[in-house]
Amino acid sequence: MSHIAIVGAGLIGRAWAFVFARAGFDVRVWDLDPQVLERLDGDIAAMVAQTAPFGQAGADPDATAARIRAVPDLAGALDGAELVQESGPEVLAIKRELFARLDGLAAAGVILASSSSALMASAFAEGLPGASRCLVGHPVNPPHLVPVVEIAPAPFTDPVITARARDIYARAGQVPVMLKREIDGFILNRLQAVVLAESLRLIEQGYVDPQGLDDTIRHGLGRRWAFMGPMETINLNAPGGAGDYLARYGRMMAGLAKTSARDEAFTAQAAAIVGSAFPDTATPQAIRARQDWRDGRLAALARHLADQPQH
Image (cartoon, rainbow, N blue to C red; front, side, top):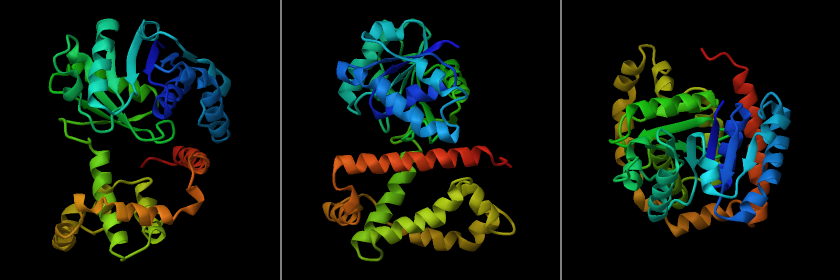
C-alpha cells in the first residue's frame, strides 16, 4: 500500500497513525514540535501494548509499530502520500495557514483531510489552488478504538476525491459516514451537543446527580447504542416499525424536545457539579490513567463486537 502522511502527532494524530499502520499502510508523521516526534515511538509502543492483548494492534503488532516513522520535515512526510490526515489545533487561522502550506507541498491528486471536530472544509480551504482535494475526515476519540469517521466534503470538493477518501478509510478498517452537505459540527458532535445540554441541565437543576445521569446512558441508551443506532432502535420498538413508533410516541417526544435544554445548559455551575463528582480524576495524571483504563475497555469491546454477527 502507498503511504499516509500524518500532520500533527498529538493524541488524535498518533491514533490515526496507529489506525493506518495497523491496516498495512506505511505512515510518516510530522509535527511542528520536535519533542512530540521524539516521544512518538514510545507513545506507539504503549498503544500496541494496550491493544495487542485484544487483537486490536493488527496481525503483527511489531510490524504495526515498525510502519510508523517520524519525519522531521513536512515536505518529506508528504512526498508520495496517498492521503494527508491533518490533526493540528482547532483554530481557523492555523488551519487556513496549514492547508495553504499542505496544498503547496503535496503533489496533485493527494487528498488533504482534516480531523477537525467542527470547522468545515469550506472555512479553511476555499480559494486554495487545490481546494477540490480538501475535505474533513472527522474521527471520534480515540480513533483506533472507535472506528466511525465522518467524511464532510466542501461544496467545491471533487466527488472523485471524496470517493477515494471513503475507500482509504474503509481499507484502514474505519466506518465512513458520508455527509451529503456541510453543517457545523457535522453529525456526531451535533447529536452529542444535544445530549450534553439536556444532561447538564438535569444535573444543574437537581433532577439527577452525575453518576445517575451516566448510569442512565451507560446501562440504558448506551447499552443498545453499542451495536444498534437510534433509528433502528425505534424501528424495533413498535410492532409496525418506525411509523408505528412515531404514531404512538412522536407527540410525547416532541413535547419533551420543546422543553429540553439548549445553549443555556453549558454553565460554570454545571461544570463544578460534574467535576466534584469525580474526585479521583482531579489531576492531569489521574485523568490520563483513567483514559488508559477507558481505552483498555474500548479495546475489549472492539474485539467482542468484531466477533458478533452484523445482522
